[in-house]
Image (tube, rainbow, N blue to C red; front, side, top):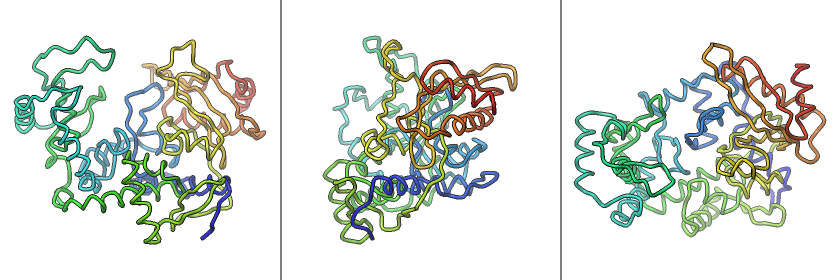
Length: 401
């Protein structure tokens, strides 16, 4: 194994680990989805739907156009392969991680009564659990008895029912059975959500659980710093560092130097000579969700500006990095302008910016990728608005295409 990697090598290792070297299937199947999930490990869930829900996008970036029903089946139907939990943040994770997360659930349980956002109301907890047991999978709206919603905070304005349900979800006393058409969570008892063989598995010791999470993070990253590994499953720094040292001793991780810093290479990671990727990356894609890592590997400073006032945004509201081969070469602010008439919607490029040193074929490749994305989203056309230094060339490339 090498003692050092160049940044270019580290980028290619990272992209290979994330599935960008996997041979595409002409028609993605459940097997394709499972292979991709083995690369990403988790899929972050987010409510923003200006383009496509966050958990669908990383699969598209790696698999190409696919039937989103595949993911719904994996997450909501038997044999269930995925379940939502606070794994990275809110995320879909493999069901086999449920026993590993028991320590995290116990930590949340120990904080009962110390949570500022939810009252320590055991009677409400008992009543909600009894109601779910009788009714089956239910949303907070289904279960809310009309309790007033707080008005003293700009946040989500959740009822006490919703806040208590989220506490019960964090502690593992309820699980997420799925979401309805309004993207509202449907809560149910774990035994009606998780496969029985998963629930029957013993809880690993805390050191074993920590090693398993770091092992999975290392496999998904390929090469990473301790901070990168900590962030993947949002672990305490000390627990991560201990697990890293143990995995190094076991030969599963190999210390390497990248740009003068200590990183760790997964022992089975591929070090490809080239990566031929072409993909738009969601703001919540594992390749870019740890912004410091993104900047170190790709020399790409990235901030999501959804919560920034419009007149203070630099690049736009919902900006996606454009990965071409092994570099991030551009960024585009995208919006799916959906219309009620079938096939009448459009993909709107509200702004397009090239990165310094972007290759000559950036506009042509991005135009092709935008057409492919529009087709997957069921949008009839692509509209390029005249904002950003790449917009004129992208407009010409789009018209030519």
